[in-house]
Length: 231
Length: 391
Image 1 (cartoon, rainbow over the protein chains, first blue to last red):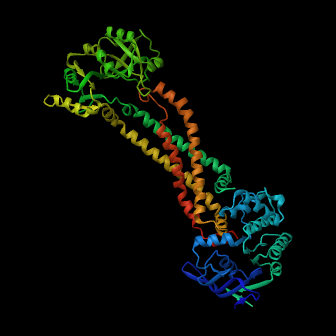
Image 2 (cartoon, rainbow over the protein chains, first blue to last red):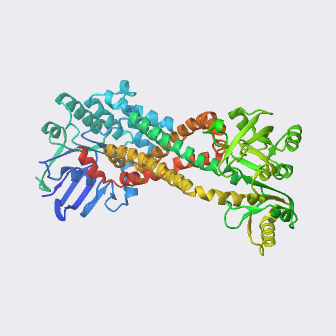
Image 3 (cartoon, rainbow over the protein chains, first blue to last red):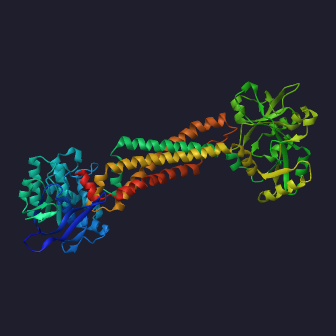
């Protein structure tokens, strides 16, 4: 079953996506002939049971993986045909990542973690710091800039991760179970923050979640089951 | 923050492990330096041999002697400027049983002209030449055994055992040297004194003949010319430039030197494994971080450069620490002690600069080598799988 977002020209257009993995000589089909559009400025959630292919789908539309069959088009560009180097450069310029376990570098302070993606750009050192500080201000962590991840709560770490995701001003933010490791109050904070980024800054956001409360915040929720989208 | 700053911060992640690794590399570098310095000091005599000297010995082995009259023939050979001769006496001072030093019977009138790097004051030389039982000792030997001018020294020799009277000498001179690599713990006495005391059958034999030549670039030709003089005699000779002669003399110790070479390589291999193990552990622990960096746009080459930078820094720190320990240890303590107490074997035991440079360069180069496999592994991680393992 296919699902296409109704509003305007989609930012993301997936067509005929099939993804297979080979494990121990056995081929496993994770996604099957799937179509999906995500509108520009949308906030969408992918839900489904474990093994339904949610994270795989997220990886494909974020340029972390390539489909076995089908096309992935983001902002008018086919990313499924890009070389590894071009794809890395494309991700660094167009995608912000938020992970369940935050994935901050423990040896870097909050502001240095946020600055990390900017190391790949020609931006000057002082400007990098300024942009990182701005991103931390957006997520409400101005008073934690010099703190290391071990000195932060889980919610604060995830805020730093979100600041790192937006510091490059990406078109798209993808979040894989962004509230999975958080308590309810912290999870609500993070979801509110994502909503704000979507509403006030116009960021297109796609999240994978098991959390119905998280899915409720999204404008559109896609349900996956056995590699197919359910209506 | 910069790329290099990030690599440096990663080294501070596990300070104990980084510290122990740096220490491990430092110990390996120190051991390597000591071994190479031993080899260098051992071969220093040959490496700094006079270029204008030819040594003539028995063609079969230098243990066998030559007729003394050969020395007169060699002196007249084309291209020879000066010549002298000497015998290995193999003496020991019974008052200092455990001390080894070289003892030679030499032709007092000519020996010091052929070996000008041994310096004796004029008055002392005159006193030596006037006293048939006189001897000249190196200044470090004199200092070590307390020998003074005018002192009687009695030696025992396994090669020339004393018959009626013991081998007693009077110290008439103390030599110094023009270069630090020259042995300053030897004792020389008059060949005549030895020869006259020997039974008839053992008289008029010399161990080797040393000659200074007019043209140092022609030592091979001049040596061949000398050997030709004795081709038709009962005893043939082998003449070599001093470097080759000393090298052939040291060939007897080649097994020891080879063992030192092998141990040096083993030490370097251990150092590489220490570094490789540390780097590999660090890389394994940071798989998720590398996956995250790859996800946000870092390329495999960036990851590889991070890891290489860390390994090079570890190698640099370890190499530098090894040198910081080695210099005072060798130059201030060990080297001085060895020169004073084992000067016959190690007349000059100091860190050779080329060896220092080599050790430092190797600590960095092997750091790179040790990190190649972990760097390749980290650069090739499958981002989605690594991220899934974290989640």
